[in-house]
Image 1: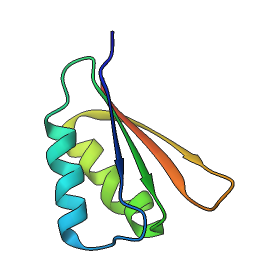
Image 2: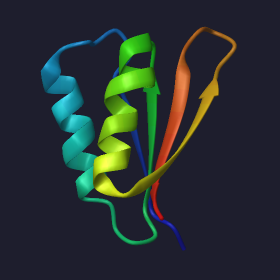
Image 3: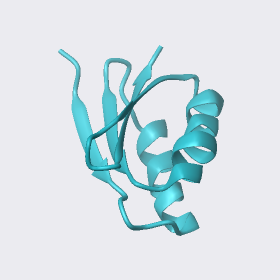
Amino acid sequence: MAKQKKLDISGKTSPYCLSVVEKKAKALSPSGELFITCDNFPAVTTFIPRIAREGGLSMEIAQLPDGHWEIRLARK
């Protein structure tokens, strides 16, 4: 069974927030999933995809009705 973790970085655009995303992504177990809620377009389109690519993670993005995005990172 996959272990799911949630992280909400809405309203936060600092490099520290992205380092938290990177740290949690690297710590994912083989069947783990990280769900990130975010409202920052550059984080969704550039920074988090780079973290996923460099970490060998699959990534799915869904835009929510309230203007936020939910990003799912998982081990491939």
